[in-house]
Length: 155
Image 1 (cartoon, rainbow, N blue to C red):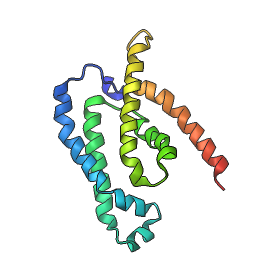
Image 2 (cartoon, helix red, strand yellow):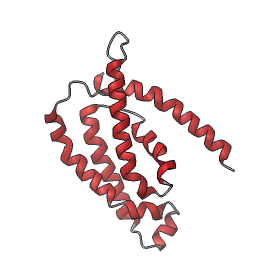
Image 3 (spheres, rainbow, N blue to C red):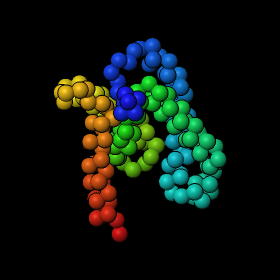
Image 4 (cartoon, rainbow, N blue to C red):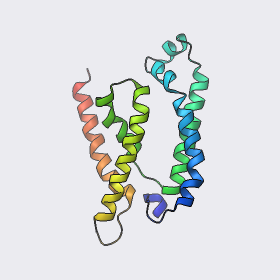
């Protein structure tokens, strides 16, 4: 149940050191996609005409994401919405260029996770509140607000 709801409780540095190489390799692969992701924001045909190898870009993006998220999920369990909310919080501050959002979104995601973990340890509801529960309680209304806002501004 702890893995399904996500938690940082009772995790050791041994577990962190065990998954760190996989997370670093995945993040490095994702950093190599920055230029291609910027071009891909224009569309596949436009990115290809700009010289982006789409097959390579997709492989780097898929395997980089799989390595980084798979390794971190193996230790913490499923902690939803952090990776979805963080880029949307950073985008108004950094602009809409995808490559400029990668690092700030990762750092803001780490901060969100830290704040959520501290909150789960401070809020007492009988048994320990799991991290994934708190992040979904915050993330779900955020996405409803985002969808409503986009529907109002979209043509």
